[in-house]
Length: 571
Image (cartoon, rainbow, N blue to C red; front, side, top):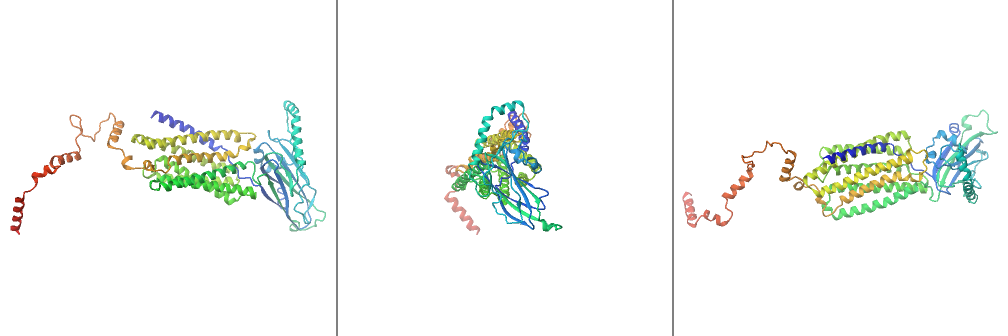
């Protein structure tokens, strides 16, 4: 009991830390598209004239800017320019607010510590919107050579270090210049990436007026519309460098889930007579996991080849993921409660399990939809906090139920089921410890870092949790796999109910030193025989057990004849 109490105290501390870190963990943003349509008109140009597009690009990725269409009531001169900049800090690019775009446009200095890189600025001559403009009007004949971002402030030691590395910097600059000058410019292309990393592409559109502008005209006569298309293509089409490994991960996991589903279906078909109720739950979780991975992989394929993600498919994938996680948690809860193993039904606990599952499903769907719709970080965090609290409470409930189930199996001396639950408990403890370690590492690397330079590892934030869930599911599938001996784990009243000897041993352990009032004892201390024992003793003494013993009781022939004669006389 002391060891169990120490273990429970350890789990309480561990789960509190898990809750604290789960709230502050990195919140993954939506997928990065590769194609945008920019609509500019005379009404919104006065409110916003700079538009930013962000993406992590492969080296030698090409950026296209194409003039799609225009609708000008009268000739209008437009000044169009763009600014391309990369940074070694991921959060500097993707955490940039729209209100800060003006501070970065045309900037050649470092804003955040560690945010070094290169930049390119290009400005076109005035374009008259009244005439028919060709689609390649914004294309360039040769790519501009990027210039290195200068540090805003540098100490003497940094200057000496810069002087010492001057030769290396020049060689890098020369390499970038040679790559840009030797590149062939495709149609509609305006710039080319010079290294792997996060980029910001800012387009500036400004109306400069026209000499032929009608005087005293109405606002409708002066109205104009313009549509531009921005595309960023790399060696793997529109997919970004940060999402390429995640797409490969979903492809591998989809194949693994298909194999697991086929294996589970084959085992279930072979031993369908001996299937347990919990094995149907496991099959449902495997099917949902396979479907979830297939939808996510299809979404990344859509981004790769079309440059856009299907919004309905993304929301459907998040809802499917929420259903799978809810079903998985309900599966772990009913397994820890001993459903189908120790007890035939959950009883009153069933309503609590269903209620908790519905609440978790609701919170999970809300958090997922807000996250993929690129809502404000505060709103997403507000939806993630109750989900984290509920998740931690479920962990605590699971471990308490496992402790009670294992105690019951230990009292019943059912070593087979006890070994099963020991392996299951060890797996869950390993999962909690691994989650805490990973959250600490992610928080230190990304959340509390001034410069997120390890942006290549961002995909692990999403992949780790799905991989860890798959490991737990694989262990559950192995422990509760269908086999010819599956029924030895099932609840059987004749086996799971304690015998009289076990009850007597349990009663003596529980009430040692106490007087049992329900038991009557003789003077010598022995218990009075029960009524069943007295009946059996009477049967043995009065009822013969063989034909030889029954011989004196059989009637002779004369007695039979006399009996029949007396009966005939009475008739």
